[in-house]
Image (cartoon, rainbow, N blue to C red; front, side):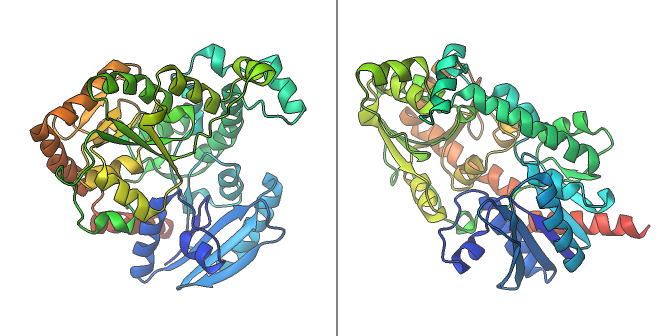
Length: 425
């Protein structure tokens, strides 16, 4: 069979072919791509880029790649239609619903030949955009608007919520049009059914990045004691809430270090009018900086920036605990990677997280707003070696079942076969 994917990144092997740095996002796609390629089926992978002036086609390691224009829906529809006419795939698999390109592809396809894998679901994530950030910090005010007009910043959190809500319009249309959906979790399935009660749900778990199947396992003797690994991006990921917890942890463990992957929070030493402007029209980085200064956390936090697959794996194994502090999450690839590596893990109760951890058995779950509970849970793992070992062993076992590469590869191909067989009936 011939499968066409629509993804929102340039896949790592294509990036390497083009002499670029590989994206640190969408790591699960690499494992899935290898599974389809090794199965002997034909694979075409399509993505979009804003700097692309015309659609381009590449052949890399037996996979056909397209980079199409990222513009209006009409522009993308035109490029996608040309790709579909040339390649004539049996099944089209759209990864993610949260971008306009998903609707552009779905709108030119036969619904019964189309599969969508849910990633973020902005329709519902938009309701949690502020995370734990106070409204007075998140709201878009007149000063924000003036700064944007002057092209001096002004990127409020409310502005991000508005972007989510605009993208949600395309997401809803996409999910209502397609026939087959892989929700990923009960949360993803439930949200999908609310938007399209007629959707046919097909089960398949994620395939993690290759490094996390190499058998390397966390060992408390080798980890950096009292070290935490976490992610920093938007308020949805709850980094600010983790900072509220960190101050409690440091009171009991003064040598605690927090290692942070993702965005780097570059400190701005503003004074006078510039500080006044930022205090009254803050962005998320400024709010995070204010919390770090308020709680005297600067010496305890190391911002690592975006890490390669290998770097993430190495940092995981060195960490005493991994924390996912998200306000909402369908499934967390990094949590899965931490658990399959045996790293004791903690996650907020949101979205599909409660399917990934069995509370008190292979990790801790805590209510998103209860940062004091998170602090206590971190301290317990620091202070109770036997508990840490239990979470390590049982967390690995749980993740190994969930992210069983061979089973998930079979399930991925089974989804495609189901769609093709239904077309023949």
